[in-house]
Length: 203
Length: 92
Image (cartoon, rainbow over all chains, first blue to last red; front, side):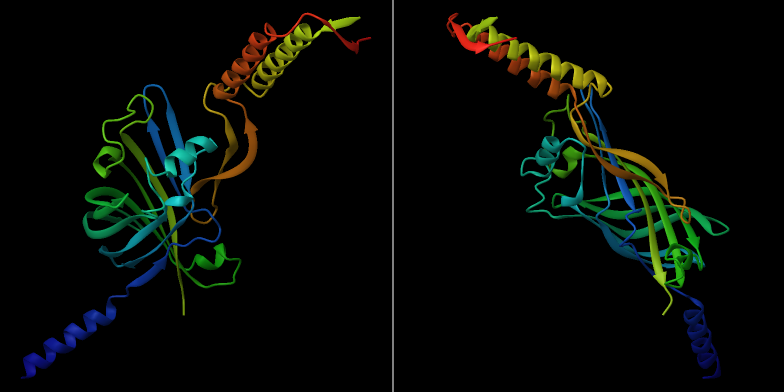
């Protein structure tokens, strides 16, 4: 009985020490960005988006304990040419009316390495584009900036920041986007770069 | 000095062609598609995130040149359908 009580106390204290913090990735400053590049033989396309939201719960003491989802408003994807943008968002390509969100949901964090307030890891997650979900593994660099939210908000809000960076590739054909078509002008491989800062205000 | 409709139409075609080519050339001859904005790189001081600030700017591309050439050649071709009769427009 005594041992059972001690085990319970130990379990409760471990739980209390785990300080999971929720970071909100909606960025009113418009700094959070995703860049996508397609390099086809006849044409190179580069676009961006700032329409990012979602949240990640992380325990700064335990880099592998990360959960969350990043959501991109598909209609917020932009390329500098208006006609190309109209085609990209249209029914033949991304069909943003039917599929208004592009998401990445974290399932598992592997091979994490911690170096001070930064760390690298491989994140296994579910990437959903045009209604098709596929499991992908992406290399991620995470930087934890405790107490830096105040600097970013001009002292209006106290809290921490979590900066997430990643580069990975997908094949548009895998997500039902004109598989095998227009390959001379629109590359099948899409390079995606994310640089996001999430805020965790102190309550 | 009087010009026929045919000559005026051809002058219009030449004007469109030269304006289009000069605009493209002096905007920095961009062989990509026409852009309605350009991006300026910036860095967030706190997070170190590099991002792009959009600035509205019309940058004519190769499609703009193609449209200009097409339009001017179309007008030039149409000029053959016009009479060579002198117009009443007096030119200095």
